[in-house]
Image 1: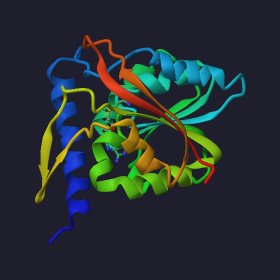
Image 2: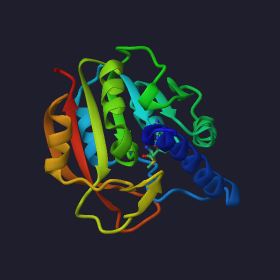
Image 3: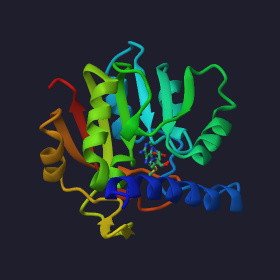
Image 4: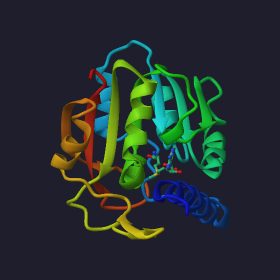
Amino acid sequence: MIEAKEQFKIWNLKKWEAKNKVMYEVNAENKWPWFFDELDPDVETYVKGLGPDIMDVLDLGTCSGSQAIEIARLGHRVVGTDVARSALLEAIKALKPYPELSLRFVLDDITRSKLEADSFDLIFDRGCYHSICCFQHGEYVSNIKRLLRLNGVLLLKVMSSDEDRYTSYEKVGDSAVQMPFHFTQEEIQDVMSPHFTVSSVEDSFFYSAVIDPPALARFAILRNDK
Ligand SMILES: C[S@@+](CC[C@H](N)C(=O)[O-])C[C@H]1O[C@@H](n2cnc3c(N)ncnc32)[C@H](O)[C@@H]1O
């Protein structure tokens, strides 16, 4: 019998590849509801506020790559990773007009990342953790901590418990779990504070070029100093 985590890993990969196939192949103009070709204003303010030094940044769960491209356009060295090859093909297409950027896209699963340890000053996760946290919280945290330099920061954007749309319960093996998980501010504190200093958790949005009003989010700034 395959254990639940392994079932989830297989299920998660199939889910994203299948959804991307429908999304990108049926109509080339299709965009996911979270697609935003700018940085969310709170993310932009935070990243710009870090000053002029060039940082090594991981855009985790990069999907169509728009966030990775925007961070690279601020001058940073960026790696965008995703577990779905189909997403990375879109990201590579989106990068074509920007050959000058220091940005590469890599197929990588954050729960068993093959990227080198201590590689990043900043990891940005806009919508990955909330869909894998029910099964893979431990693997996620240990990989993030391995990849982040000491005092590096995880910028985490997850669905808010105040959002009553985008609630689906998915059955994986014998379990039915909410995906994406909708977080209260306290839940983020509880799950992340044993591993990171929680600098802030604010109410926010998944700003979107596709849906109006945008989905309600929580935006957490987590420092790797523990
Ligand atoms: C909601 S989308 C986020 C899109 C992107 N960050 C953005 O803001 O446009 C979540 C992405 O996480 C990816 N993903 C899911 N599980 C992952 C894992 N274990 N490792 C890396 N990426 C993963 C999915 O393939 C999907 O592209």
